[in-house]
Length: 98
Image 1 (cartoon, rainbow, N blue to C red):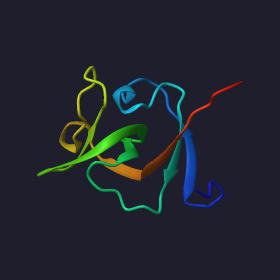
Image 2 (image 1 turned 60 degrees about the vertical axis):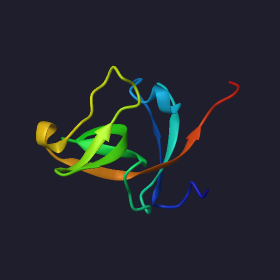
Image 3 (image 1 turned 45 degrees about the vertical axis):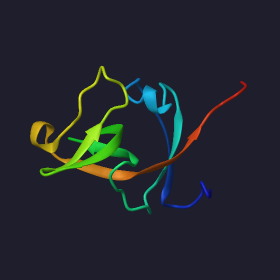
Image 4 (image 1 turned 180 degrees about the vertical axis):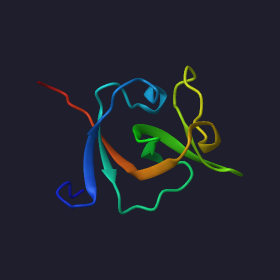
């Protein structure tokens, strides 16, 4: 993992919509823009310019963003506007001591 590569970003998660995938509020994720996203990947995406971390799924209408928490519903472009996938989450960086 080369975190200094220009196509690699580290982002911090806000919220609990991906908790059942082991991604929690405050988690730091490595996002790789060089990987072609496909169904099943966890991605950083923008929905109407709002950044979201979700699992990518395919529907007849295009990409759908799915949460890993039943309290949140899926996001489809027909309901919310454009979905732009920024990159694929490759690592979750967990802090063990402060």
